[in-house]
Image 1 (tube, one colour):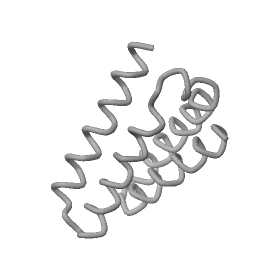
Image 2 (cartoon, one colour; image 1 turned 90 degrees about the vertical axis):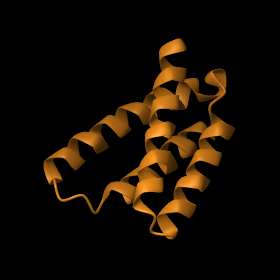
Image 3 (cartoon, helix red, strand yellow; image 1 turned 120 degrees about the horizontal axis):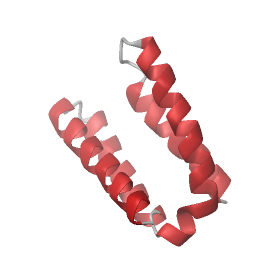
Image 4 (cartoon, one colour; image 1 turned 90 degrees about the horizontal axis):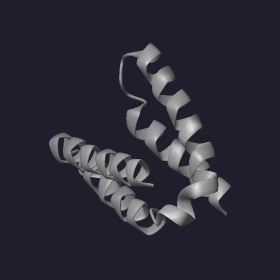
Length: 90
């Protein structure tokens, strides 16, 4: 269910970001995630991002649970950049 995958993706990312002090920026990010959610609902399967994104999310979660901020930020940057590259190619 790609609608559910998109919803869970948005919730996962907002959980990572929620401690950021800039509420306005968080609001803008969440708005962008809503837009991405709609896009992913229709295009995720065709792009082949699903499995790769889930592995990225698991790695991000492990790094965050270990409270390794530098590693978490690096993994997040890689995840976001990979998504941008795939969407741009698509």
